[in-house]
Image 1: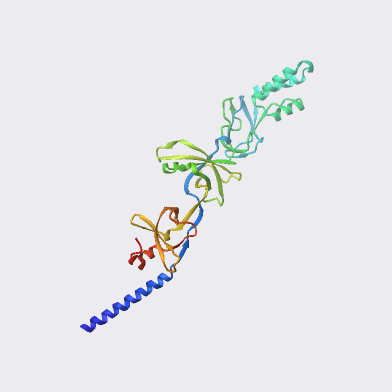
Image 2: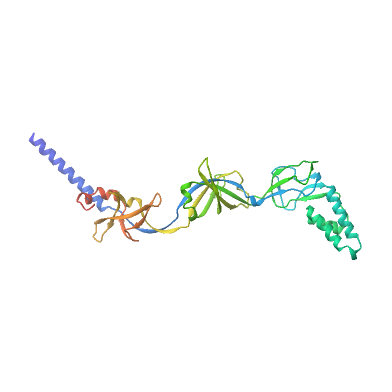
Amino acid sequence: MRRILQISFVWILLFSIALQAQRVKQLFNVTTVEVKELNSSQSSINYGFVVVDDSLVVDVTPRYSGFVEKLYADTLYKYVKKAEPLVQIYSPEVLKAKKEYLNSLNYPAQSNNNMVKSTRTKLQLLGVSPQEITKLETQRRVSQTSTLLSPISGWIFEKNIHQGSAFDNKKRLFQLVNLERVWIEVKIYPNELASLHTKTRFIVTEKSINKTFEAKKVLLYPKINPKEATATLRLRVNNPDGLLKPGMYVSIKIASEPTQKLVIPRTAAIYKNGAWYVFLVTDIKGEYEPIAIKLKALDREYYEVLSGLTPKDRLVNNALFMMDSDAQISGTYP
């Protein structure tokens, strides 16, 4: 029995020596990292919808009554260019005004200056196009119909007439929308509002479009959505190719301008007894000094150093290992 105990003691001793040797080997293989300065910005991912830019919406509403003789813009969501014909109209009111203007042009020149000016102004106030007025002046012939031209390049989002329709001077015939610039309405949560003024970069992506768009902050709406408890931020985006379309659901990376911060890897710090600690490389090879510092989480990879370290200080990269090492057992770690 005594011999069995002696053999067991020998095995325990050998195991202890092997374990200590392994720890020594690990200590010699300690990896270190340098405290460094990093350009970093705070960012978040938010979501929103593409909507029409109100300033690029135009209602086409004639200032006279009439009848549709020929409809050029004959389908909803058709794209039309600026000054392209939308509809040819017969209007007794416009026809009468054109005849009055022609008569004033044909009247003896010495006394008709005021009449010409007055009858021309009447055509302009009725919304007759400059092209049609010029044609009347050069040809000296009255056309029975007038052509309504598109005031902008854009898409027909609303069409309220058909071939042969009659309308009065209060009827909106078309609504045109230019999509070369659009708005993004972004959902902003209450906890994000306080730092929103620091955010200057807005990158818009949509999963089906292989392109990113830079947006500009325009307006924070002065109300909260009571159902979702969110505010709405309006962004403006140039959309020359028309890739972004009203109703699209997009993601927006919102970021502040990059600033320089002192950082260390998350693996280099450990939290103990209400404080953060790192192991500083000393001038003596193989010795590391545990020191208390102040940190703040920066991202998934780094902590920002608030105090206690300077650039180019070297630290043990695995603080958890050092805590479990003989350095802690011998009492050098607080």
